[in-house]
Image (cartoon, each protein chain N blue to C red):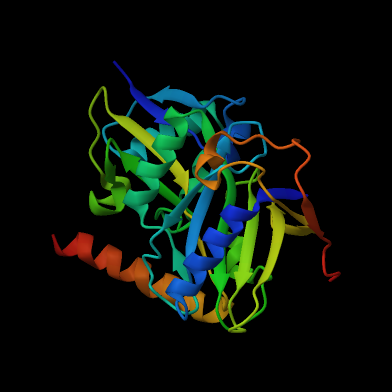
Length: 115
Length: 162
């Protein structure tokens, strides 16, 4: 068995238009590396240069947001279903929002590390 | 051009007024490929902020799955600006991840009038489009099955030229 990954519209240019693809990996990071070997460029849209999940996407394993499961270190099992969605966010003021994003991301990471 | 039923616009404005001065946000789903918004889904602003909005990630998963099950897509993604004009900010543009959606902005900075504008945001490029508000000739509670083109009275709002 493999892991099923649901791809959002905006990233289907990397999967030849496919809405669902399959992959393998023990962690989310491994899975994304595996996917990138067949769908080159996909991983860079999901993972930053600092090897963290991009703020612009939400990734779920089954029914859980991976930010609460260790992000790229989230453990995967055969038969799991991974869903990628574009994060929907924004707001009036660019600078204030950028600060909110930065602190929000940091507190989420801190919460995961603290576990 | 975005064609949208008046009752849905009124529900969006009511949501924005209710949450003012915090930003309000939500989705209007419609049948996939129809470009017709039919089902209004107000979402929580997980940021509860006057200058930022963010869908709660778990609520979003639930709503996106439901749309998928019903063969729908997010035709409109809306949010309010509560002290500034209804024009996408740099943050709005950076986050815009649904290339097929109409990004509807409502400004509630004036207490007696709303500014409602719609945009396409694709690959960081913003294009404003006219909003056509359609009066349903049917029971407003039956909006989900309402189809356009039944010679309703219409009001066309042209882009305000920017």
